[in-house]
Amino acid sequence: MRYSVAPRGLNLILKQIKEKCICFGVQIYFFYLYRQSSLYKNMIQLEDFIRDIPDFPKPGVTFKDITPLLADVEASRTCFEQLLQLTEMQQVDKVVAIESRGFFFGMLLAQHLNAGFVPVRKPGKLPYSTLKQPYALEYGMDTLEIHEDAIQKGDRVLLHDDVLATGGTAQAACRLIEQLGGEIVQCNFMIELTFLNGARKLGDNEVRSVLSY
Image (cartoon, rainbow, N blue to C red; front, side, top):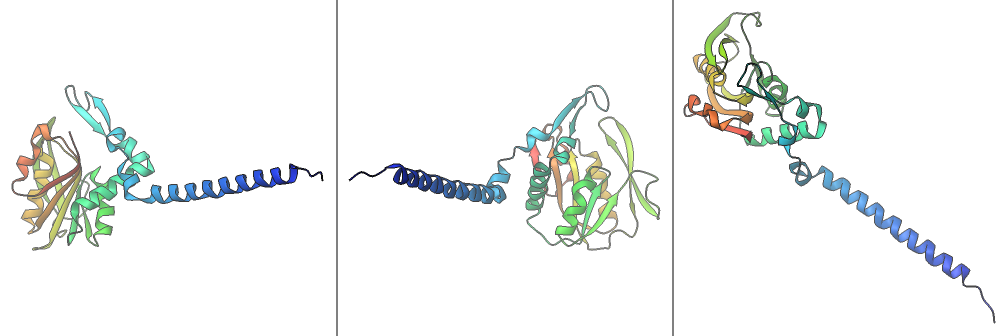
């Protein structure tokens, strides 16, 4: 009896193709789950999205530019999630963020912590009656302002900014919060330049940051 092996061979090939497609589909599905997992997100190296700008805003200063991180959806999402983790979801009444880069994640933190958002701004930017606090920074002097009614006595406050450098700006913001009767729960930053010892100016306040240099 003669028979052809072609149908059997074709069926075998089709079976192998089907098995590979199923396997490939499973691989795609698990890769999708993996991408959604915290493990994948934690593999993103946020340092890769921070750009050093030498001699800005004046000679001798190296500026940490976070705009590449903000421009990348995965990096910015990961950064925010890590900032939120730093808070340990403590109960706070207000999130105070410092102009202007502190606003990027400050408002999001307030929403996720079910807290009010309070902007601390440079002179002349807030329309209502303000409390003022001068401070020194690494390249001059400046002043911060906060609305007089922004914080009530006893409010639990999270202070947020993008970078803790020499600590002058954060110290001024802390003083404004304390003058209004707020209780600082945590000082929360994207980046801390530890070699500048800025945390020392924040006294006993807890300081946490996502990245340290």
